[in-house]
Length: 81
Image (spheres, rainbow, N blue to C red):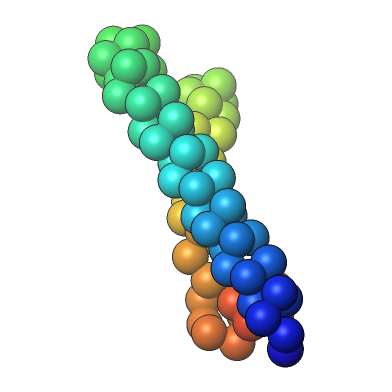
């Protein structure tokens, strides 16, 4: 691998880390500013299909973000490059 290729890969990895951190912090901010509304409007009501759908949608996003941001193994990470 040439020096230029290594620099491109390092720059891409740095960019990817910045994108993941930016997205994660935006998601955390959104969760924090809406948590009080969620507690008031969702947690205290009877559990219906709509409640389950809301909770699934809201918390599946956290799981999918973690799943996408953290590779399962080093082989998976290397396979992506």
